[in-house]
Image (cartoon, rainbow, N blue to C red):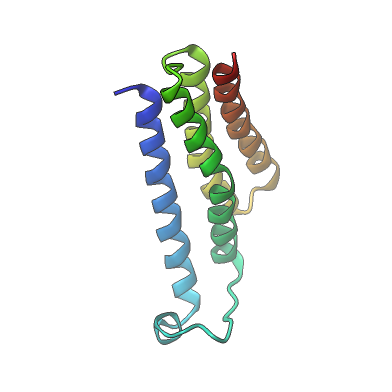
Length: 130
């Protein structure tokens, strides 16, 4: 299996971990009765739980583009180049590091890591469109 497809699998795992981490942090601030109910009345979260929630939604904003780029590169027979391998690795490592930085409230480094993951995504697109 191509390295890029393995990294796509790793990105899925990162997303699931972020989902569970954000949900667990939120449940620590919200009671289970509310969580198990219809949630008609919002129960806000704050601090690291809110940051983890935002980090997860940020992941969801970029992951579909990454998945589509890797799958399109696979369909086009473009996997295995330096651009697709390093781009996929940069995206996945960036996304893995982003959530803990966001949870810790580290702003500038977090933004640099986000940008690095975006560069990884662009690298895959460049390889695809060559």
